[in-house]
Amino acid sequence: MKPFGKILYILLSILSIGWAFHMLASYFIVDPGATKLLQHKELGENFVHTLWLVLLRLHIISACIGLITGPLGLSAKILRKKPALHRLNGKIYVLSILFSSVATIFLAKDATGGTITTVGFLLLNGLWIFATLYAWWTIRLKQTAKHRIWMMRSYALTLANTSLHFIQLTLMKLFDVDYVSSYSIAVWAAWMINIVIVELITKQKPVLSDLYKN
Picture 1 (cartoon, rainbow, N blue to C red):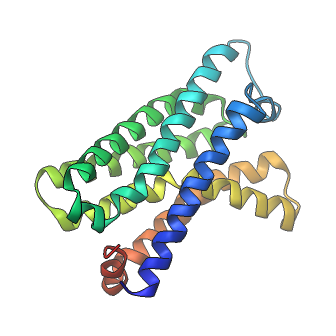
Picture 2 (tube, helix red, strand yellow; picture 1 turned 90 degrees about the horizontal axis):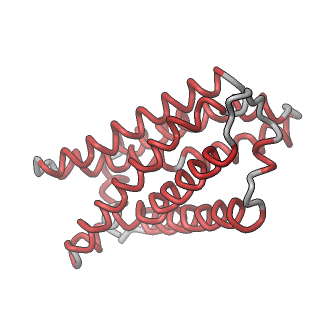
């Protein structure tokens, strides 16, 4: 395996698994009531905290499963040596994205930043569902090359939450943008930047080939 593909795959795996455990620890141990997240929202009279919290936890657990199973699904080594595991992992990934996406639809209406953020989340969610289901459909049609590319697109969108927090932190610390504004900008920028990055990767055949030699 060439160094670039190995390094890229290792970094992606570490980032994904590390962020998944960070999110689980943050919302189930450090701040189980999500009070830090709620304090920046403008909530209406119909807001039901218990229901919102259940959906948030469903979203987080499902998304974290997607974060962890994603790199396993991108590993051609597992595909070659343990195809049954690859298929099982893929089914878990797709189901986790679907569960997380359904929860997002309900959570989006109370997104920090109001309507502009809600629209950004819903667009991301729609693309996320489409990319994931299309990736599943292409492998059903035995279109392996398309399946790999669409799985990469799906996983790039799975990583949008990770990118969101890094972008927001950058805006707040380096450019002194307030929390709500930086969050709204990051919601849009995260998935757009991730899509651009994955498209650049998929256009480079040597890089794509190298990545799939894990």
